[in-house]
Image 1 (cartoon, rainbow, N blue to C red):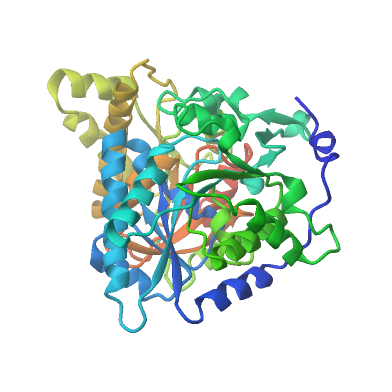
Image 2 (tube, rainbow, N blue to C red):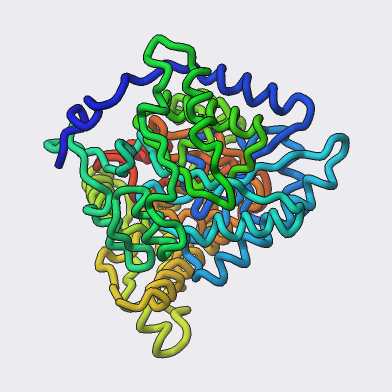
Length: 499
């Protein structure tokens, strides 16, 4: 594993760029014709880097009308497409884009200009290039506007994902602090549905596009370009260098960039703003913090427990912590929580029993009845940790892997929904991307929410549901692959009245 300091030694120091500088540039471009970024988030964890923005779990024209009426620079749409097969994912992306464009055209006053962001995983899992392809094709079909470039920025420095010299890395922690691991050498690259073998972004694009985009056709903005102005220079110098570098983009040319810090994201944002001012039509395929930088939003400090309940009276019931993710860090976080939170009741959903019941009888109703009764009874006296068994059922068939994942997720959703209708919890934490998506949209029946901010620095977002049976209950969206071993316990401790 290379040392980050050694890899960075070949490049200039970062440029200090205030968020306000980007916000002012965005405001200037929106002065005559308001622009909103529509973020198609393939799981809900993409909201962890932003604050005070609307989020939708449904995408009818009326839903977009509500979101656009909030007068914010971006709106998140929870697509949950990482849990869908390619055909389903494509259809959902198309429907969302068409409805967003229809709502924008129907707004009172000046027609909104929409930009589209395909938000996906910082460890490169997801439907790429399918999703940006579908978005570009739909925009062209509806408006006639062709996409010049697709900007691919998976970096998530808050969570230790950085891109340097065109290679995407994970930062080490603990004894490996200061070291970088190419992302293709991590457990995430072995994902049953979205595995990959290349850490170099240009080669990853070639791999995933099956050669449609050759590696040497990808525009790579390395740190020499991102930081062209030098640490004390004018950020507009870098902005011009970035815009010049992507001037040749046409027909959805892939564009990748080195990102190590928030300042790099802001420098890139200024360059993209300049490129769009010159007339470039861009789509974005990004990790969580890109939107924050692109709209010029300050990094929101972590919310306190008091802020999490602001404006609402917390229930005296226990809180519900739902853990579905199976990545290593989630299992370690679950272990730390259960060891420290001795007052919590632990309820395991046995995946083998669940899948067997579904396969053999077509229903796991009796098993779920028993689970719900246990959860509701325990909530009356304290917090309840519901987790799926840690043994991951593996299969070489991607479609079968998704079917099993859906069976498990449906069970989790049923437990949460029935619990909510019977005895509403004080708070809900959902751990894992697909888990938190399904819990939000179906378990808690959230249709519209406001992202209030992060529960930990730069990661783990709190949603305030504004309608439905979960209105007023803090909902914590906790990605499976972020945080250290103590993070789940830290968030629970903030919200719990028994921990």
